Image (tube, rainbow, N blue to C red; front, side, top):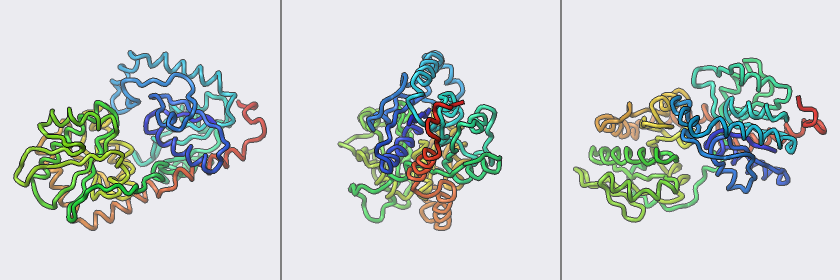
Length: 402
């Protein structure tokens, strides 16, 4: 099988599908073609990579800032894409079936392979605008005789595509939810404190700028009083390595993995940044302060309320934040616009304190997450659909590719 994806989040989600697939059928051989980035999620599974895999300046987020496309073009986007298409065509006959994860770009690659393929449209949803505008390119991929199944990240999109007349559309879900499990890590939480998860994202240098904004938020929220707060930041290793610089630039101190801010009217703000603690922090928190994509999706899916701070991009900017609100609904509220002011952060801190006591809203967040993104089990559901599609392939189906 060949897995094609066009973004870091899509690589990550697909890697979980592959893990579930191998649990069901360990003998299936898999390779990957990451269109954007170096395919670290696939490499971690020991999978071979087809074609060139290089990181471009936009990181695949040209849809939130079209000017970033110019940076990609200057960095060799056209040449890289042509080499990827060449590698795909040269080796496509080695694969019985292709799975494309992502939007029209990925599905176009899957269709160009000449093999039977499944479309997992992990980055698309009808919940943005009430219906999914398919368009001619994606529509062509959906209508191809070689298209096996369409898999969606949420049930409303599956229902919408079925109403539009497409056959074999199934709700898949978020595969990564299957691995949001506690590890038993001691987060050193004090009884009576509200746990605030800080999710600044994973792409540097943007994540470092986001974390600096979150330090300002933590200082303002601590000074404002109310429920005592326990800030826990989930950082990727590359960002954790930058903590000394982040602390120095903000006027904070760093003691191993604990950031401490200047003295305020209610003491010093502290942010614990334990390594490899994402799952435990997300599950333990009372609220999420987010400047991320997939991590915020996961938080909403498991019923957490989220305050997102509109950043300056390239990924997490005002346009991305607005789209996230349409996608995730009432569970998500935005502090902004960027560049965010201290007054806006103070309003966000007040809203956070009010949220802790709003039991009706917290119950609505729990319902909203289930209704919009479904329950865990997505990796297994998609793996089962892939195996079912493989069972429908006639012998030498790839040799009859149209």
